[in-house]
Image 1 (cartoon, one colour):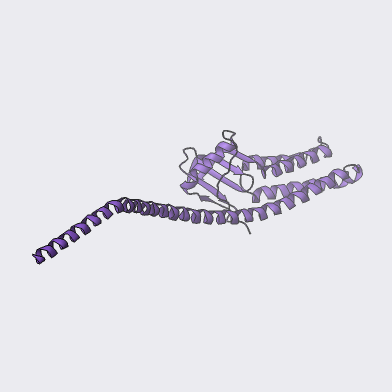
Image 2 (spheres, rainbow, N blue to C red):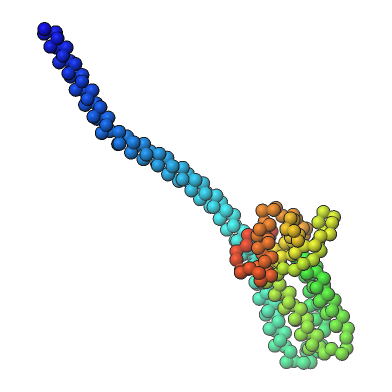
Length: 254
């Protein structure tokens, strides 16, 4: 009888413990589910953080590359600015000397001849944009110097005007059409000139594009990745699109 009593008590204890565990599981289940959801959300957040970190690293590298190019361009532009300032000072000095007619009559002709020769050499060595137009301007100046029916003052004005046109090229964006030889075949292309910093061509179907490398003095093919930016630049130059930032290849100079 005593053994039955002890057995019954043990069974009651086990039943009570089982019931208690069942109740605890019932109460813990929402907490476990919530913890699982939190862990899943945390894992997703960590993935997003890793992705953002990678993107920041990529953007930082791009920024460093662009910043390096910008530094080089600033140095190059600073040098051009000094040259322009010197030219403007020379122009101012010459204008001041116009009052002395006797001096001008003796010195202006040799000076203009030197200026025309210098302009001709500059066009030959410069970025090869608008070659026909620019060479024609130089030839007209050379022909003008032999004419006796044009006063020295008018000749001087035209020479200075030609210099002014060349100076203006350095700060304008221009698009024009022309012929360009690609792989031995002459093609109709659109040229994009960004000051004297970049000269780029693109075929009419936008399948090919290339740029003039000032360091090598040669045309180089451009990757198709620049197609969108070149097309955008051409539209901006033609006043078909509002001015905006352009990402174009620029040859670094020493």
